[in-house]
Image (cartoon, rainbow, N blue to C red; front, side, top):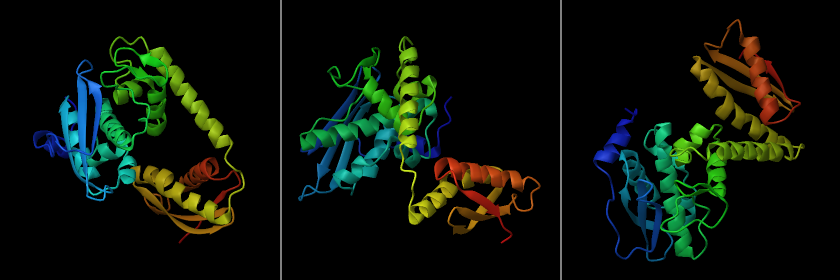
Length: 286
């Protein structure tokens, strides 16, 4: 049995906005009954055609698909189309308090339907989707024949969700979950995406402005370092930044810990990796 949050169960048992909008401004359809998942999303805009005032859905799928669709319709209300396009599949999952990784494809399908609806309304080509509706996706090379998923779509999901294994790709897209014949190709795509990310990182301008360097240091400490320290009952506080010298004070379990020197090296390594190779970290008692 999957470990569902109470919010997932609640949105499954009491889904919001089920049905259709007969005079909808935009409709997005993804998936197919053959795949076992299908979603139709209806969007209604205000009189100025600026903000979403209503959203409804019809879905054929599991409890996670219903909950993800319900969450998405709640999330888009009040947003402009551009704001709605910024919603990621991870944000849909987060809204529900998390989804089992094996069910993340449901949140991906919601994001797809939203992008398809807005693209159709604007009269532009939808981003490369894997779950074509009653047609074969023309952009990119077909990788997973069982679910009609292209390399362009799979690479997008791999990159945006930072997936590193074929099993994760299956959980997020279903690719490889039927006959398994595309698993080798999925592994190639993962390697390709990782290679592109490394190349992009290497091409980053080496010269950072002082302000940008300080911002990156703060972001890295908040997003990459502190969560790992919290896991061990510790924490740190940024005391000062002087050029490339970063002064930190350790708190909670990290304070006075015999291995705080090692922890300082870990912090330094992270900052050198993600911000600048010349950074030094100094532990201070503060």
